[in-house]
Image 1: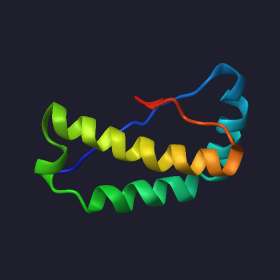
Image 2: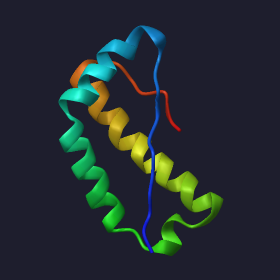
Image 3: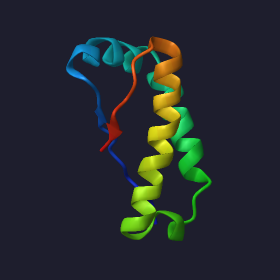
Length: 79
């Protein structure tokens, strides 16, 4: 069993260029964190709507904290 995810970030239009630049620059760090975070999860942790919602929230909190610290621009949501 494996898990495949695609992460889309919702940001304000005026922040899109800055956030995109940060994603490009920090792609390896973001990917490494995501892989490590997901490796700690059990199938039951991410199964179903509630599990997916919790996972989205965890990813949102981490990325939003990092992007606000690095750019001063928040991520509005993780889709």
